[in-house]
Image (cartoon, rainbow, N blue to C red; front, side, top):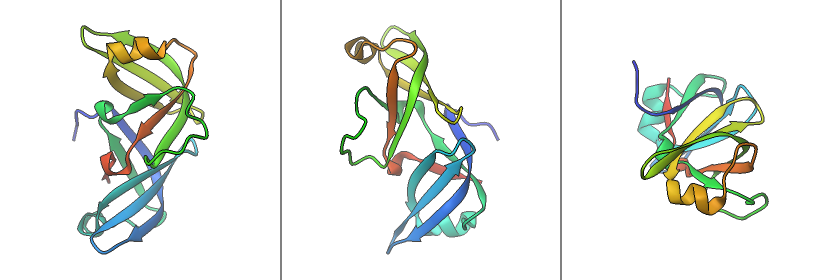
Length: 140
């Protein structure tokens, strides 16, 4: 199966925590980064998610927020992934920003061209890719 989401990351399920309706899944990527997802308990069961199972975190590029200077900031988003801008391509309205995480995984963000310029983003800048756990899909 091919999908349109730009960010598909392989990892191992580290933890599964079920609540009344939803559960929280934490994946450890091959580079060591952690990605947290909140999905329904029925999805956890139908995917057979258990600790140690290989799974994929899927994130659409337009769900990635780019932050500069957010190290140590208190945010409600569960996924704050530090990295470095490796490229930025401007379109008429949106820009595509590639962020290389320390473990070698690249996150693609689709943000407005105006935001790229407001942040002064350039290749080599230290930034964070920020994603709410509810915006992370899990696949197997």
